[in-house]
Image (cartoon, rainbow, N blue to C red; front, side, top):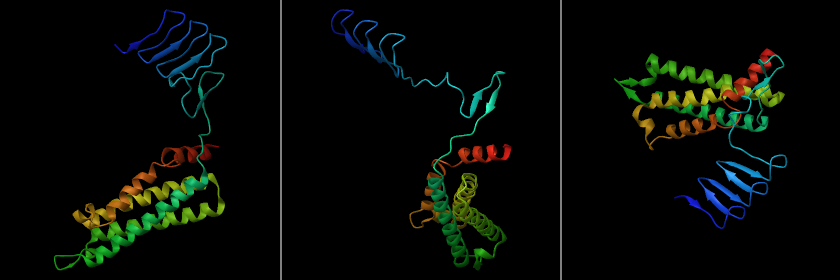
Length: 211
């Protein structure tokens, strides 16, 4: 049942519940639940997928036993900035689509853009877009990783929230293939999960503020 073996102990080669072994102890090579080992202790090379014994990310043990802050791993600033620029493009596009639809779609005998709730949505989209634009342009000039992280956070927010608000302005039509809004929202979701976004950028900014 899930176990194969050949030969007697000391010259066997088999797999037992995820373990493969060859040769006798002291000259064995096997894999046990994600761990590979070669040779006897003292001459072994081991790789394990178990990370429970490692130090938590962003922390190093101090002599006193208390964890101390450590600078987080930084993604490639160029890649992060390019993603922010893509998000900025999405934010600008959905803002344009929302304003255009609000000016042409009519309800109760007048364009929906005349209603205060729709006006506020469009105004907030524009504010977030222009704030992100200034941050992205500034980061492109300074090339500072902290500026890039800030621009990425602002651009991610402008794209994702802007696409959601644009979807709101379009109503049920925004969810259909008749309209491109749902594509912008999905793309914004995917980009926010690329390296350098979210918690990664927040940690970099936090370390810089506390330095």
